[in-house]
Image (cartoon, rainbow, N blue to C red; front, side, top):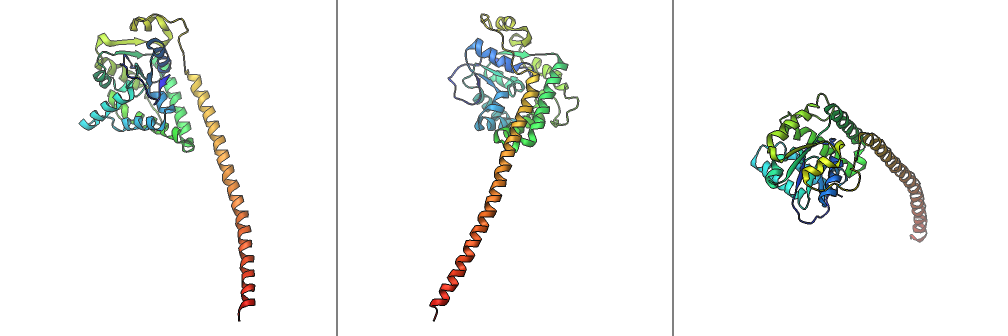
Length: 286
């Protein structure tokens, strides 16, 4: 399974998936787990499903971007090494924005840049961001979801600068499909040609296995997390959060009602107790 914060056995990173989110990176994560027989660090999955410590590590990485000082560069290098330790590959963000830094850590790794049609990518990526935007108002109901939303917003604002784009706000989005072309130029500029490969997950096992020089497995190529899942998943998660809110408000209402009635009973008891005490005091007073 993708590495989302659990301990891993020591190994060497063989592959860096350099494609942007929504270019088939989730499918690549699963495919590389099958082919390389080891854990893959999938930053997208880790930012959503990872434990609290993992989510904080990723957020701290975003806070040091763009790297303007030696402290920033040193921290980013350290954090990338920490996140990918024990993994056979890295996929999705933040790794796709730190190819140069990852290659300094793993100079023999192959960089496979996942690609798709730019218009199709933008439609899928904007759907992802619409989902995050819709979830954000509900994120106070879930600490994990809140950390994921903050991480996503921080990376959208900060990390595009790593590929030569100016800082941009996550919403509303306008012409941000330029990120796709800017990232492609960034990949070609930092990865040695003999280590760089481009791959579309629609092409299946054969070209990927040829890149890695491994046999083709006897199972279907994994095609995971399509755009339709994003829309359905967001609707389902919002509905779940609404149910959680309804339960929360119901409990609050119940506590208010109980406290009011309990308060009245308590006050009634204390008043009568006080009245009895005064009568008793009058009887025994000289």
